[in-house]
Length: 342
Image (cartoon, rainbow, N blue to C red; front, side):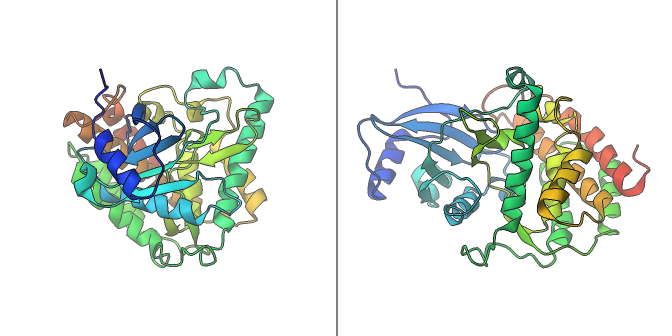
């Protein structure tokens, strides 16, 4: 009996791929890779090829957080850069095909370090080498000449941080399941302390160890960077701050399992910042603001997961505790920005 996958129509996908000039050998099969606190991700196989399909969840959408067309465009532009990405295959922006836009890229084999258990087989030396490579790759991304790779119109870097503060507040209003007064306080504090941004760059928006695939044979080498749906042109320090905020223990609740990136075996957030400053040569100014904004963003992401779980729109397990992380993240953000988090 053929498995039924939520949000996936293999017959429609087969027709689309063939119309797009993609060779399909035999009947398509699918396997759930991720139920997606963000996008739904499936492995797609025929008799000779292996691809990955990503599409938005089926409810509770926060538009910029599920824009698969954006990640397709940026990974296409980065094909020949120093940033490792999967080969792009096809993009469908016609909702009539499968109910939502979706992308297809080549499958990249490797090692995904997602949970604390995944770290058990790695030595401390392995972890240090892996972390150094992760920092190097994000610094390489921020060094890409986005005009030269055809991404000059990919975003509006001027005023990026101001728009981010406004955007994440509006997304909170879209997905909130309760009133939290500290959200108002944090948003107001951020809006009152927006710094002048450094030279803009491509930003990934969701960068941490489990949004990469490491080489099978060398965990000190990134085979590909994945999950680009939050990418744009903007302030590189917002990217760095998100990578650091993901070290917060609340990420375990957001993801629904003990995350590798929260392990105390990894370097601290302060160490990550220092490594990045050394590799990139960038000045890390106004850091308290950037950490406050990153905590706010992760709190809104957690509330969005909570919203979709309550609506019955999640696929897989581990979504029921995401909402519990929100108050602590908002309080931590306040503490960075104002020193008065409650």
